[in-house]
Length: 589
Image (tube, rainbow, N blue to C red; front, side, top):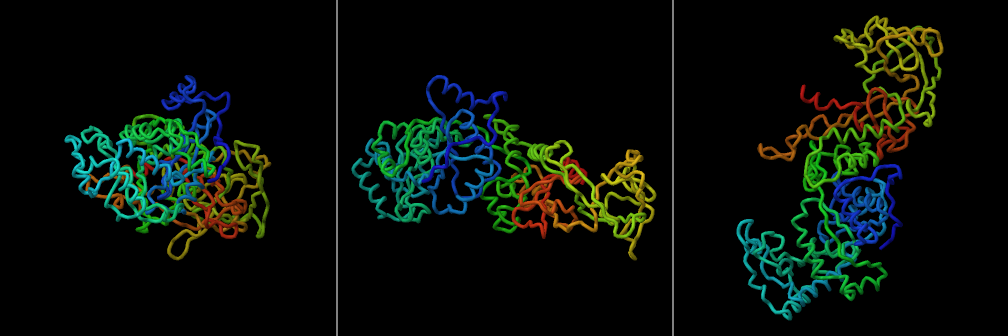
């Protein structure tokens, strides 16, 4: 176990900022004001059986954010009770994701740290007559459980004596029985209207090696049992979870109350002996709505299938909604925290439009991303009234609204790359860019007129030749002469060739998970979700560090790929377009 220092909010609220108002924070305020709790303790408890996705970002921001707001502590605890599906690679990725979002945990814990405590607690329940060893198979348990409208039936093994149950449970612990032959079940109420209380399993036999404990345990606690006791061991005051756990809360409270760790410190002796701080208390579970976004799939099973079937290029594919994928796409920690703030905390499940996610990124990057010029679909423009070999440098601000970002030098020469769609031989109505004989302003360089259109043998335009008005150059008398349009450019003599990956939404329908039509999410994959083109960028963009974001002027926001980008071979991913034209464009299509 390692301590990672005090919890700090990534963006602590300022004294002048209004206090956030939602039902969870109101509960916390009331608990502190009443003296019920002297300090706030929360935890983020992922199972290390996959990569975190954007839905987890809301839980992370809430768990760590509330602890920071109220001067408390938040633990990162891995609920590693199912070793068959867990992997150290997932553990490392989760730790990386939490830190990337801007948070640090007070203590790093694992459910496996408490396996001895869980076993002692289960033994205590047997001694109290609150648990029994059951020999029913999984299929028989389902048959005995009943339905939502019919009560269940007691297991024929429910009335075993305390002595027999203790003996069988000890033999389960010793590894005498095969997987699935016996379970330890709580003795609650088979007629309960809440199926979770119909004698749920507390332990199962699973003779599988564990990443932390090796072969020490042939039995493992069930999630509901381990999670409730893990919160109690760590003195968690407010156990925050999503709404699907609301029906599990009575079981959570039953486990906490029946075991009563705070009143039975001897159960925690093994932890104290290992030097693990213990602040046993009675936690309160509070549920909130999860983050649902249309045009996405966030089921771990389906995300795994996307990777396994080669429909995406891995867990960090920029089209994936894992935090690893969003990070590679160019989403920033600040943009995801902004999204969570905008969505808010409620008890009502709802679906957020994908444009809200993209809008949060645009707002963050618009305020802080430096500007650069890049040409994605290049067409050469030759300024014939400049001499061969002409070269000069122009000074541009790195950010038009933030002088503190300074300026940069941009080379300018006789031959330029411009965007192919900035020229129209036969312009549509309202066209403000280049046409034969027409003028536009070259960003920061002067006004150009197209004199000649050069085509190849097949009639394709390969080059434009034009004249740069010398009186319109920066600092000249005609520099402010009005023309209808302004376009960007890159000096062909100095441009750096770059791979530009144009990512888009992975699915083309709002509800790719909806299988009521007989289709699956596989049928709704966007064939244009990734295109790779060769473009040209100004030299200052090529020098970007991996994960550095820019606004490519008039084009969108792009990020230097965190895996493949180097200054010698630049690779940029489109994070988001400048404006939300997706819905209109797809509706038109």
